[in-house]
Every structure is written in C-alpha cells, then in structure tokens.
Length: 435
Image (cartoon, rainbow, N blue to C red):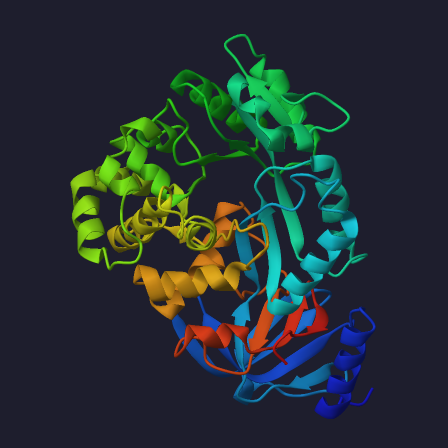
C-alpha cells in the first residue's frame, strides 16, 4: 500500500465535505504536528500521532517515527493539534416539534466541522435525544457524540412551557426523563427510570429542598449515575447544592443566591444600571460585597466543576437592564473562582446560537484565562464534567481519536481555535470549517 500524498488526501476530504460524508482511512499516521498537551500545559513540537481502529495507539517524536506502507500518512507539518472540543451545556431537544430533526442535524454537522466532537445536553426530550445520540455514535449522522441528562425538579417547576413542550405525548413532571420530586417520591424508582432513558446524568433544576437533593444524590450514587445541578436550586442555596455529591454546577451568576436567596432580595441598584455608561467600578465593588469565596473552597474540597456559561449571559441577557447584572457577576465570579483554583468547564447554553469556541474566547477576553486554560476548560475539564475522562478530553494512547488540527497556534492567540483544517472523531476524518 503506497503512502497517500497530502494533495490527494485534501481532495478526498473536500469530497467528504461536499458529499456530507466522512472519510475512513483505517489505520494512519498524522505526521509532523505540534501537540497541545492539555495535561502538562505545554506544546510538544514535531510529533507523530498514530491512529488505529478509531483510537490513538501511539504519540511519539517524529524523529523516532519510521514511515511504513502499512499506514496511510497525513503530512501536517507545522499544524497544531488539540483534543476534540467538548461543550458541556447545550439544548438540542427542548421542543422537538419546533427544533425539527433536520435542523438539529444541520446544527450538529456545523458543530462537528468547527471542532466540537462531544456535547452534554442539559435537559430535553430524551426520546429525540436518544435517537440523535445513537445516530451520532454509529456515524449515521455527521455530529458530535451526544451525552444527555434526565431532569428532576420540584413540582411547581413543571408548569414551565419548556417542560410541557419536552413532555409532548405525556404529562409534564411525570415522564421518566422529566420527573417532579416531592416528599413522597420513590427515589429508587425515579432514578432507575432516569437511567433507563439512556441518560448519562441527572440534572437538578429548581425548587428542590436540601433533603430532596441529598436523597437524589445518595440514590444516584448507589445506582451509578452522575448528578449535575444548577448552582442554586431555590429555596436551596448554592452551599447545600455543592455539598450534595454533584459532579458539576451550572451558571456562575447563581452563586449570588448564597447571599440573596430569592430574586426579590437582589439590590435594586443592580436592576437600574444605565447600560450606556461604564459601570465597571460599580460592579467590581458589588462583587466584593458578595463574600462568596467560601463557595470556591467548598467546590474545591468536593471536587465540583463550575459550568460557567458566560456565553448565555453575554448573548441573551447582557443588553437587558433588569438582567444585565447576570453578565457582570458571571464574568467576575468565573474569574475569581478560576483564580481560587476551581475547575471550570466550557459550556455555551445559547441554544446553539454560538458554539463552545465563543465560550472559550470569553473566558480569555472577559474572565482572565490564559488560552491554554480555556482549552483545558473545553477538553480535559469538560470530559471530567460529563464523566468521560477515561475515553476523551486528552490526547493519550488508548483514548478515542477525537482531535482537531489547526493552522495556527491557539496558545498564542485563542482566535486560532477557528482555523480548523481537519477534525477527527473516533478516527474518522472531516474537513474543518476553517480549512
């Protein structure tokens, strides 16, 4: 078997892009690339990655690699390789009637070509999600792998129109993937039914008491399913959520509810800021008044990951005078938590209006992260958040061949994350969106 020439490979990849297909080469070597090592926080220059049966079988300096005719060769001299990106907060099927399958597939296709190889869906209709997840896993659609959640919340929440839309054909709050929790709920059965939907984790949303949260956490641990949660579950404060055995908590601004338990408790001045003025000094002062540093320590002690979701506040509430405080506090809490040593994962939560790359840029440009730290948030730490760290999130022998090849160095400039030449998911190759 002759080694493939790069020009021929590009021709095949362009065909794959146009034909909406994927290229499977079997076993191959990506030669002479620079690996962004997210574990050690450094770049390994001029390495070769060997991929066998959809997994990484070897990473070695190119000087030690001997080309042979049993492997196809993809020559990518001077390019940069990062692990496949993971978005820890998406919503693909809140209302499957409106978010029709064709639209979901189109969006997922775009996500994969941008470099996103896995996503965590944080509550929706698992009947639709399980189908999408299956087809993504086996390659029937061009898509990141999809790990989804079942939702549990207090009874009052299930009048929310989103839950009604997700439960079409059934009753909101009574579905195995969307369950209302009360004092008399059989948690053993509720957790078992959640597992039966194929969910990777259980998301705790709102209106849960501390005892209910503890009960769900205990039963979920017994049955071997992870628990994810909003950072506050009114009336329950963040400190109680953080200490309840959850893997991750979502939405940085919700940590303000440790001091202000209810929305009505928020200072009126937060809701009345003139958005045409520079209010940086005001928000810096208000953040210091919060006194939430103890929460960062609790998160570290309990190994809880913060799914910050800066993007959603930037895009959906930042221009709203009544809601603007969320974006200002989100930036400051995320930066402070990061500096305190809290593990941050990158989740967008913009209903796919933006992808995780936007979250990474905001972490760098608004929250004080170095580019390497933002890449970690969307790879190694994101994999931990979705409990997939054994198979993805880093470039290691034996892990899935999920990786992204970039034209530019993302450590020098985070915007180079968009210069995608090639995306590899489980060993299959796709022309990158930025090629």
